[in-house]
Image 1: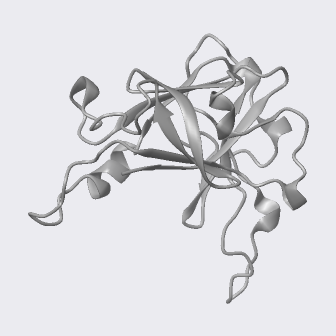
Image 2 (image 1 turned 180 degrees about the vertical axis):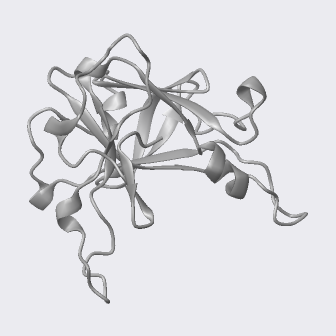
Length: 183
């Protein structure tokens, strides 16, 4: 997934948005990662419990596509751990990077904007039409049929993996996607 590098046990994306390649709206690529290195410390006791790293999808990128979980994650996450484990229901939660002090920069796109067309998300061929907030930055997506399920992640022979397509439609918009969770 990460095109920019690897450093001391964690993936490193582009350190600043201006370091990213120019958008290529016709290539349907994987969203590039933005890694905020200024938050990293070399301390025995971590001062931050999380970082503001994110996949970034800009308006000018056009469609961006990826598979979640990726193959390495799926190798661990899709194995049954007991006879009682059930198949995924395909409920999808997505989170964006929180804005400092609640002040978002111009063009910042929230997951909730699927309802007004500023953001298009398609999961295994099904469009997300609405969302339900879990907190200010995380939303559970609702499918076009009004339900919460996007299927079992078996499209194209996959096992518990979902093809997710993103497109930001807001002028000068950008989505900073920090987490995708499927249960």
